[in-house]
Length: 358
Image (tube, rainbow, N blue to C red; front, side, top):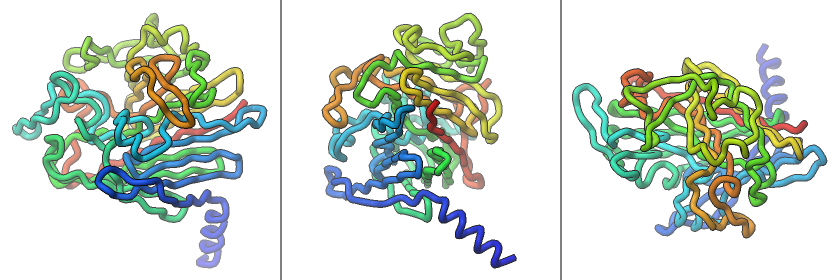
């Protein structure tokens, strides 16, 4: 039995995509940034840096074998730090908006940094997207760890978060999240990768087809917060209905952001597909989370210089974001599941982006 287990382990290792590591410059305080590269047997390459646990590159072939980078990003660590755009980066301690930049846990009110009017978005002024993670290769994965101090951006408890990245020969980019805390605190981790299946500098996001496999979404107010105490509504008859493949160009100018609901948390669900009919590239999104944010770069800064001399901008000049998450502002929405992590608990979630061509 032991010999059989060893043979299985060696076979798994043979089938694994093993990442490599190299330097990627440094940030202003002199700390070094690492870059990790995966390349599988199907000519898909994914690169990740330790600054912000950021996905910087996703190269994949189209139906004719032409390989292009389909994720937006920058060329240097300094640009990621200076531009502070969250492109490709980890989001934490919470993803999306927190109503009133405050919350109450066990009768204690906490005020956190308000970086969008009276509210907080994506963890505050310096969320996980601007943190240097401790990163290392562990077998066929890259594991990135960040310890958020008690009181950072106003959040209680020392939060230890571990994000691991893995690319398989089945063309799955797997993001596994794990976190523990010393005090009860809200948590809602994710990643803000921007996709353009035409190639990151091509624009033309309107040519994409999007499908979201849910008939329920979260209505939002003018501050982009969930209405009332947290409402859910049907997408039927609205511009939010992507149950069938929908041309992005039809909705992009009237669509800011929307979170879709998938019910339970903890089970793997196929939540979305983004595809390009011209070149055949597509991405399927799977997650254990109960929500998915869809964003078409409506508020991206114009004339934003990216990789390889690209110029990004809002709407069709940006990217399409498919962000698995818990429901927004969950801790302040009585009708939504709470997003509190307690010291005796372990937060986990898995998101998979599966790349394909047809």
